Image (tube, rainbow, N blue to C red):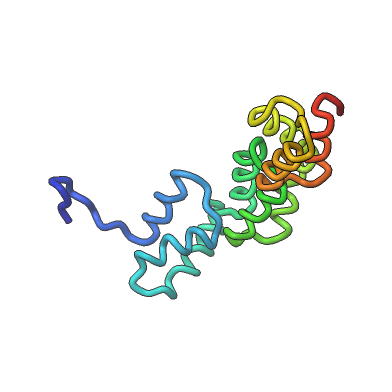
Length: 154
C-alpha cells in the first residue's frame, strides 16, 4: 500500500498489537478495542490477547500501575480509579495499584491546590470554589479539607 509516497506495509493483527504495546502499556479491553478496528474476524482477538498475557506482553496490573504513576501527582484516587474502571481494569488490580496513591493523596491535593491557587481562601465563596476544583480532580473530602483548610500542616 502506498500513501503519500510512503510505502505502508499491512500489519498482521499480532504485529499491530505488539506495536501498540511497544509504545505504551494498554489494558486488555483498550487493546481489544484498538485491534477490533483492524480485525477481519472479531473472534480472533481474544485468543491473541490471551497469548499476549501468557507471554507477559499485556498486563492489566502493569497498565494500572503505569496509569496511577502518571496521574497521581495531579489527580485524586477517586478520579484515577474511575479512569481505570473505564479502561476495563478489574477491581483487585485497581486496589493494588492505587495503594501508594492513597498514602500520598493529601500531599498531592496540597500540591495541586498550591499550583492553582497558592493563597488561602478569603471567604466562604472562594473556599467553595477551591474545594470544587480539587473535588473535580478526584481528591477525597479529607484531602480537600486538609489542603484548603490548612495547607502547611501535616
